[in-house]
Length: 323
Image (cartoon, rainbow, N blue to C red; front, side):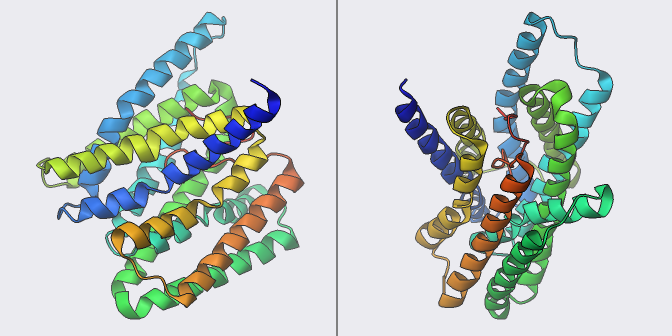
């Protein structure tokens, strides 16, 4: 394939991947119309998605052995499982629960702030530098988030507060996933690491519903929505994002991902009928600007930009990609 054509294909794959990731909240909100709880949706989503990632993990392991590389150590596998627990199970549990209380638009904006929590945790625990540019980006982001929150608060009241804090918990859990993944992913390779993390998270999600859920009964419509969330919003975009990374720079893919909340907001207005006021538009623009500025600045300063999330909105270091 000619380089210009390859780049165009890469941009298209990255854009489609970001758009498909953005549909997750829409699938979940539609599923909640079936009067089901968050744990059932969480469990069925991973029931449908986990076999794909198990298959990818088996293939990645076979490739590793074919190259003569040693089998992964139990320690590294354990790190991958812990990362999956934090980044895919805990974050998903908080995120799905939060969507029972707040709009899909607000959820996506709150979750989209996870790169800033990576910055805060990295500075507090690992002594990483925090530039004035990063602080300014964080201020812009949270001013915008405050505007959207204040707009939704009069109508949602206590539900808005509960839902926002739950999704903030998801963003923090996801930030921990990224921090751990950056430190351990090279030992297994991204395909095997991510497959183990996602597969173990699938087990945790099913166990969560076994312990806390109320049975497995579900309508055909709900099952189709859960299947769509698993395939359209989880598996397919993972492959598309990786195809984009293979053809264009991780910086380009990362910046394309900043359009993800815009797609979610548009779908929420069109499909769910969620209101979108001028204040929502201003707040959303500030959040997007803040996170976009932080991502751009971090890419330039570190030379190791993050790439878009695989499942909840996870990222992996440059030159490492998920399935």
